[in-house]
Length: 224
Image (cartoon, rainbow, N blue to C red; front, top):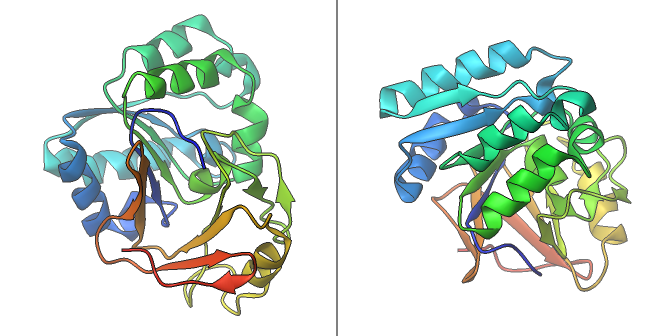
C-alpha cells in the first residue's frame, strides 16, 4: 500500500452532519484552522447545500472554510481553481457520487494540484463516497465490483454506506467486494462514525468508529 507524504483521512460518513463528533476529532488531530472543500461528488444532489452544512459543522470549531465549486471537468482543468488548491493548508473532498468524482477529477489540473499538495504534506480528508474514490482499486457503488479510482492510496479498497443506516444494510455488496478484491489489498468497511488515517507511518484508526477489515477474503481483527 502506498500513499503520498501528507496525512490522508478517510471518513465513513458522506456528510459532516452525520458524524459531527468524528469531524471535530479529525479537525483537532490535524490542527485545522482553514479548509478548502470540494463538493464535486455532490454536483447533482446539491453542492451548495454541502458547503452550507460544512460551514455549520466547521465554523463553530473556529475553522475557516472555502467552498471550491469544481463540478465539471472544464472547471477541474481551470488554472484558477487548481491554484486555490495549491494555496490550501488543508483539502476536504466531500461525499456524494464516487463515479462522478472520478470522472470529473481524474487527469485534471485540479487533481494534479491535490496530489502535489498532498505530496508536500498538506492533509487531505475524504468523506463517504470520496473516501472510496481516492483509493485504487475503487468500489463500484452500483454492485460492489471493482474499478479504477483516483489512486491517492493504493492496495486499499474502501467501502462506505455499510451498517443499518447505510445503503447496503444486508452487506451483500460488501461481500462481493471482499470476494473480488486482490489478495494483496486490504478491504476496509467504514461505518458512518469511522475515521481511518493513512500516512507515512502506515494506517491507524482515529476515534472509536467501527471499521471492518478484510484481506484475501478473510475478516481480520479490527483496526485500532
